Image (tube, rainbow, N blue to C red; front, side, top):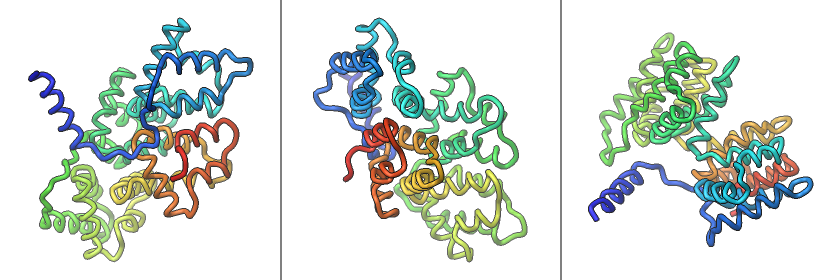
Length: 337
């Protein structure tokens, strides 16, 4: 019995440290992996492929349920379900469905790997993933990155970036962020706010290492209070100061960090709005956010979206996407609240 209580104890400890989740994709009730596997097998074998069934099944099951379906499928069809889906689907729908066959952490790790593998770096993806994930998520991502790619995330990031941009990303990957504390340390809040001001707006040039250490090592609730306090010292708020003080990828990274400290779901909602409304909807960004957040906080992203942009995310998807891609995105977002 001790064993069980130990495991339960560890579970509850972990849950305490995790950010609360607001998923749109939740476990299906009366789940029958064999029945789902049979439906997917038939859908793949149908002349011209029955995409709708594949979308209906896979967007309404969690990752762990999809894993059970894949297992049942392999037993039935004697072949790997991911390969079968890859062969049957194409384009944007294929990208989303294959993304759903990875866990959130595996998907994040693959996004990072994809952004630094080969010639050139996809800075936008790299910045978004490393600067928006929590400390706990980054700890998991590092582990899974090593398992999947047999490579050290820190080394890969260091090898692909340079200067202060590299230093900031590496500081985040080192996951030294303090856990939130129940004690509010007003002295430390004031000290950090003043240090951020004195390292930037107050002087000619910017003392970037000070900004990096404060923003990569303090807990999120602490930093939220620091940015409030900062306004007592600086004529500009933190985001405005970043724009004035630093440029390029370093500026983009600090901005994503601060936006996520202040309201992570609003950050993602704004990114989605920007991507949808831009000429030729930036599918890559839309896919990345919806697939990576559907079991994390997409429900809250949807509510931030509606509050800030005057229409629902679902309505924007209907207006700016089409075909199976539209259907799979709507399946993951779920009905309008």
